[in-house]
Image (tube, rainbow, N blue to C red; front, side, top):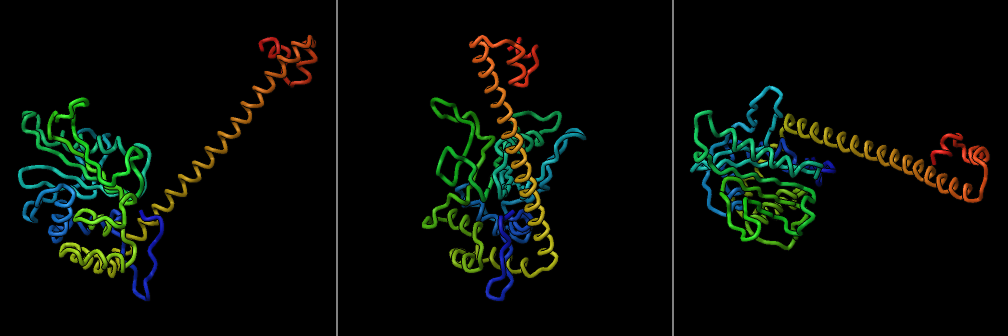
Length: 293
């Protein structure tokens, strides 16, 4: 969730931010907003997509066994021709997020086939991760695309799995283009920021209109505020756990350092031909511990 709740703007109620998962789902995962979704997908995938080419499907990943992990994607759809696409929005980078992309895309591939179906019937799966944090330290690029390539000659093994990452903080403010405009829209915080970029296309103008409607709805705002509270509480728990871990690690380090210092002291005393009982009394070790050292 966003790190700070948006405040009222000049007497108007603030717009709800589309990087909150519940708002993103309403904005891009509603049957009535396929024109918005189609324009965004075309910007990411690089080919024309019409609203009628999109079939929205249940975002829950199927469980093969009762104790399987339950994956819930923000938006899941099938394009004309059968390609399956999932879109996930995250605010914070967290441990395991890269592995989770592989888990989701693997589940989406596997759930296509029934028991008697052939592997050649598998259709391509595309995962799009939008993150309002830094994810890939290996590059400064805000849009990365991963696929199955041979390491030396870089030819494709197949086209069955593709992962797109979109890192909002890396986007330069002076960048231009269809995808760049959508990313600016997603990372906007104030009504003025939304309006300045929404005028660039009809689908983004529609997206702003939908945000205005959602922002005026009390039930939607209550859910939004609840999600913000959950995110703040989770960050506080993580911060507390981190601080406790650092404190514990520091204490352990000091204890370990004391032991190493005493060990060196014992060695120095033995080199000076001091008797074992005197060394034990000075260091606090037992006679047996001194003898073992």
